[in-house]
Image (cartoon, rainbow, N blue to C red; front, top):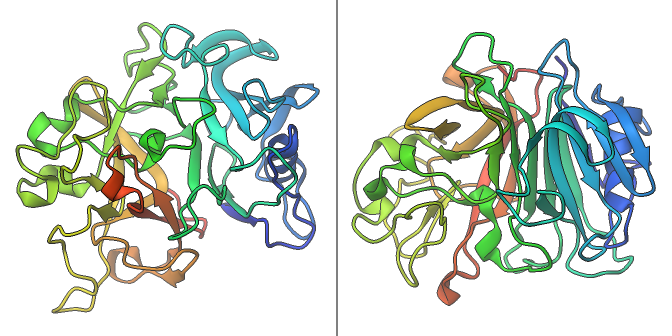
Length: 353
């Protein structure tokens, strides 16, 4: 397993814009072909068409599941529709689809990857971190520039707590098309403790099947270390979420991945006694159980402790790991939280496990 960091700032990197086809050009270069001095992540193209692809992960190292990317501007050119398949038979066709059209009414059943705030040739910065079974994409779309926050997209195998889990692929994206509201920035959203977080699924989060293998596409949720705690950081009695709605009530406290609402008392950074930065795995859950965690992806327990694109090396239990910080927007429907950003730290060393 080799982890590679790809960036729009690399020499020979393809440009990402609001024009149809620019996203598959980036994914072709990163996942399949490589560019400049960067080698490809080890994926293949199973099917190809004009501004459309089916990318297949390594079937030896992982499940071998595939991602259909419709970058032909099905809703608007600056967004692409993304759908997983266990066994694709063509562009947007196959068995084991996740999500399905019954679960989300976008395209054939898809989450959205937003490329740009504008439908034009404005070039946007992007970062993609991948191995041959999973990738994390962060795009500076221009929708949230002050402070800067990316819009992420996730596809690939998680680390499952079930031995030999052939249905461990997750897809995470926006669940509304042609809308730049941070209300639909699902990746940064977490459930609240007061609503039993392991019972909560989140918009735009899906896996191909239950760990038993029975049935098909399922909605899932995620949580971090703070979900094991109770107290004001999760807004007891007011800051949680209900049902599958990840958006809190107006002006209620919010906790997201690596960030909290302004004004909440949080874990200090640096931590007083040891000057430490503390990280939590990001666990995937459904049906009241923890399925596993996102490989190589961590949430700071302290609120937005670093700057966007900061790098560092781990100590203690994280010795031997290198990290990259990415600022992300967190979903909220409150006007006072429009600048509410969070943060993830991604292992850039080949230490995903």
